[in-house]
Length: 192
Image (cartoon, rainbow, N blue to C red; front, top):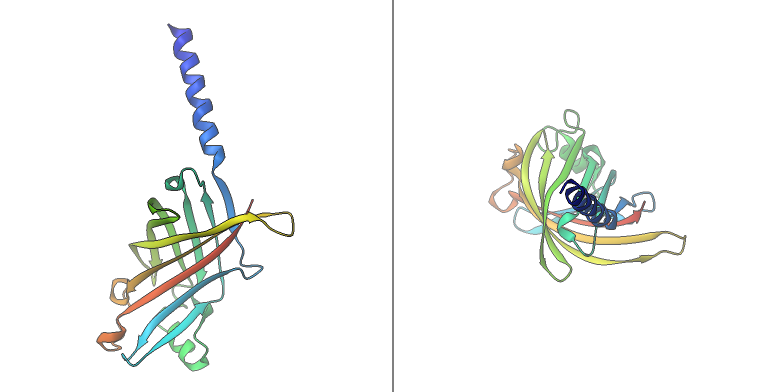
């Protein structure tokens, strides 16, 4: 009986290990600038203001056969905000908005990934911004994977989520049309 139990335990461990080995780890390619964290917010209800964060890094793990086992971790530098207007960027870095001096980084760490269709998933996780941590869901789309010309292997995803500024203690009154910001994330990772 002990021998059968040990054999079953060894087989289970081998199968679990084989399943875990199928997930690949990727480093987000910010060095080659094949990744973007952009945002879009209404300007007074009259037009759209677009911007980006120029400095961030992150990793993800991905298994095409078991996407629910995927994980994502990203850290961005809030002072790297760029809306193509120096004075506005200075204001965005201030304590009216990102409070970059007090909270120099923002982080996202996934908690679950739920497949929503062929090549799509909801990535739930915790976003820490302006010193406040809240759960968010990123609607993600798998964009592709394969060998690159430099001998590596890459995978790419795009996703978006909408944040309420007040949820992250950003209280600046910009009018009712400008209380939410859409984050648009596009990443290409290099398999490690």
